[in-house]
Length: 145
Ligand SMILES: [Zn+2]
Image (cartoon, rainbow, N blue to C red; front, side):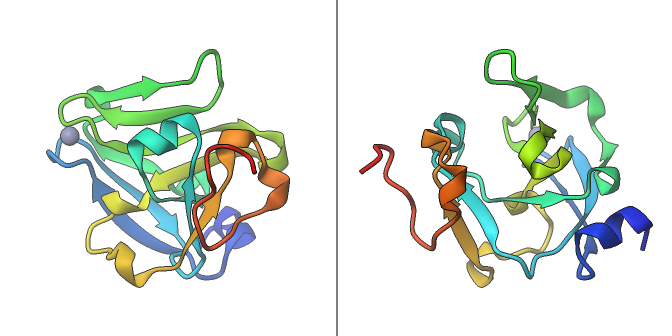
C-alpha cells in the first residue's frame, strides 16, 4: 500500500468498475467498511448516486478516457465524469478546502461485484450546504425545517 493510501484508511482495497455500456473502465482503492454517502444537492437528487471518497492518486481510468464527459455546476472546480455513450456518472473530484484539498469520489454502484444493499449508507444535506450538521441515517428534506 502506498503512503498516500495509508493516510486515508488501513482498509483500502483495490476495486475495478465501469459505466453501464462498458466503454469506461476504472480502478481505485476504496474502503467499503466506512458508511457510503448520499446527498440531496441539486445534482445528486437527479442522479441518485451512492458515493464514497477515494485517495485521488488511486483513481485511474483503465479504458474509455475518450468517452468521458465532464459536468460541472457553473464555474465550479469540482467535476463529475460521465460516459457520453450510456450517461452513467462514474466518478468525480475537485478541490474543497474543508475536505483536505484535492478529493476524488466514486459512484459505488459502478464497482464490479459490490452490493449496495449490504453496505452502510449515510445522508448529507448538500442542498442547503449544511455540512456542519454532519450525516444522518435518513435522507434530509430539500427544504430546511
Ligand atoms: Zn458507458
